[in-house]
Length: 395
Image (cartoon, rainbow, N blue to C red):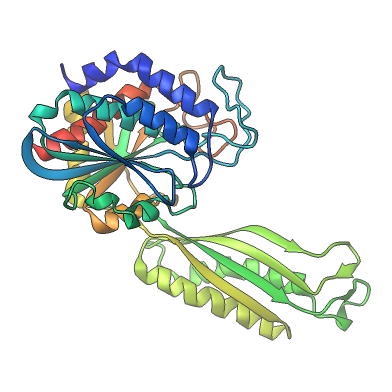
């Protein structure tokens, strides 16, 4: 049977695992219950399994029956600090935690791929590394696993690495999408504290108002973007947090804000770091205040290898037929720590539309929403594509 036929035969088991993971989501690097469920799902397979020391990761290596190089497949396992608002029989049972980004599907699909490839182990011309990763949501999980040796788990570096990510809207259901080159942005954090001098709101001239200066900084950030950066190498600065003061008639001593910074090139990332600091310090000085600014480097740009990206599309077409795969017209401003893997290994990251039946992909709640939902029907497709990518790449 083909991988897709075999995956469809596993559908009930895949759905059961996904629902089990969804009811008990865990956030961050420490996911003991999730790790336990993954190990149980892999039990009995001919895999060399190891677990992390600084995080609840699972690394499994399948040795092929024929000699050859190694390929890595990755699935992230962590959830988000979100309270689920869906009415589902398998709704999250953990208050304030939810698989709102679909990582429970990724984990399930990767476990399914391990079963599919194990069944054809003797035909496999090389080794497959299955990377079950915690801590993708802002905890550098991929970086930690790389430091603990996941890329060398088979004894040599993989010749290629692949990752999948479901989306609950924006894409037609059961379609795949990727593109060569930059796919997802670098994500950095800009933090500013404006130091002033407090006083009474009725006599602002006797104080140094950090709120007024901070608001001016927030507005100036957007003008700086349009006047400094080429629109064909886009950047985004979004202030998501602003804090200052305690009461309407009290001017505080300080105010602070935080922004997410998204870039697609090393040049813009470096320039952004310098220009943001110069801007807020200059505005503060013009008002007689002081600004303490820091730029925290987050996930790097997710860059697909051109040939591996084309290989993903060709494999999807061969597996599912025409019309299920398309090339993304432009990069996406989201970020991914699979970027750390792609800095060391040529590979590709791709998206899978998982909008449930009855919802419009254009208006359905998107990933990270407390109302985000994902269609179980894509589980066999994802598992089959994972397995086909590894099997065909090694062939």
